[in-house]
Structures are given as structure tokens and as C-alpha cells.
Length: 109
Image (cartoon, rainbow, N blue to C red; front, side, top):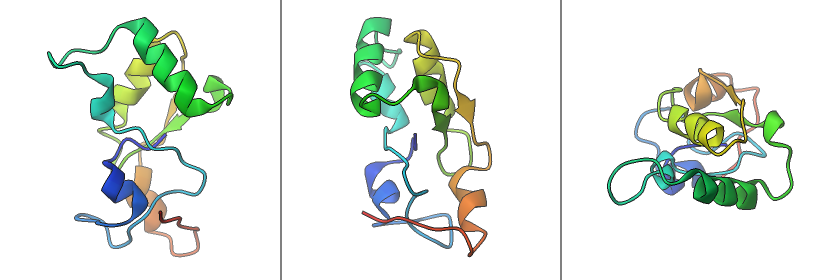
């Protein structure tokens, strides 16, 4: 689950890394989607419903969170834990590490 903004995920803009796009097969959930208007995490039941919808039947135990550099993915990881869908994993190197190897595939769109 990629926590970057949708435009970065789709590869329309990339302000930090030399390659735009996302890891093939990744799903996009911007980390800010976990927060309510008050800046706090949404209720557990709401987070659970949103992640279950995003995962569309995928086993939550197989989720690996990532973003640009591993920082903004952590709210998604924590939100899934709050929702009772954890533990899940973090790819700390995230997009920056992935795209640094030109032999790795990249998806856009």
C-alpha cells in the first residue's frame, strides 16, 4: 500500500526521485486518508471498512506499506493496526530504493 499523494503514485509528478510511478501491484492510500477533520486517526471501525474496501479481499497479513522514503507509510501501518488488521510490514526503502534500480519494473497510471 503506497501512502504517497495520488499524483505521485500515478507518476504524473515526482519532486524527489529520478523516476516517477509506483511499484507494480501497489494500491494507493494517501496517509492523510487515515485522519479525521480534527487531525486524529479515524475510528477503528471506519479505518477497517476503508482498508477492507481498498484491499478488496486481499489478506491484510500480506500488506507491505511504502511511500517515498518509508516515513509517510507509517500512518497507514498504524491505521491498519488500529483497525485490527495488523500486523503488517513496512518497506522502509520505499519508492526511493525501488526506483534506484533500473532493472525493477515501474507502473504509471
